[in-house]
Amino acid sequence: GSLGIGANGEGKSTLFKVLAGEIEADSGQIVRAPGLKTLYVPQSVPADREDDLEFNRLSGGRRRRRILEEAILSRPDVLLLDEPMIGLDPHAIKELKQMLTEMRAQGRTLLISTHIIDSVDMLWDRTIIMQNGTLCANVTREELEAQNKTLEDLFFEVTEGIERETNGSVTDAEDTAQ
View 1: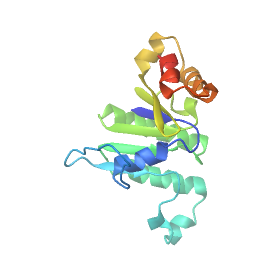
View 2 (view 1 turned 90 degrees about the vertical axis):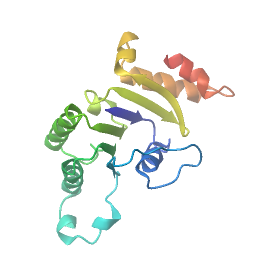
View 3 (view 1 turned 180 degrees about the horizontal axis):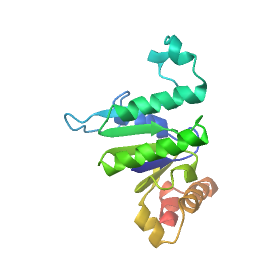
C-alpha cells in the first residue's frame, strides 16, 4: 500500500482524481493498464448517492462506512482512498484496517491519502509527501527505517523545511528528507 500525505490543499485529492481518470492532468501523462479496475473513494459523499433516501437516513459515519465497504467488496485492482478514516468510529476504523490488510495480502494496490499519519501506520510500503502540488518525498518503509525515522519525523522535516525556504527550491527540502 502507498500513502499520500500533506496538508490541506496540497494536491493529494487532485492527484487521486487524475489517477482514477476523473479529471485530466495539467501536464504529464497517465498510462492505464487495460482491464485494470481502479476505484476512487472521495472524502465527500458521491453525488450519485444524494437522492438515496435509505442511505441518507444513516449517520455520517455509517454512510462513510457503507461507501468504503461497497468499494472494498467490489474488489478493485487499485483502490484510491481519500481520508478513509474521517467520520468513522474506533470499531469501524479497526474493521477498515483489517479489510485493507486483507486486500494488500491479496496483492491489490491501495493508495491512501490522510492527515492522520498514525492511523495508517501498518498499511503502507511507500509514502509520498506533497506540498504546493509538488511531490517532495517518495520513500519506502525500509528506507525510512534505515534512517531510524518515523513517518511523522519525515513529514515535518520535509514540510517545515519547505516552509522555511524563502527563495530555495523543493529539492533543498527533499535532500533533507533523504
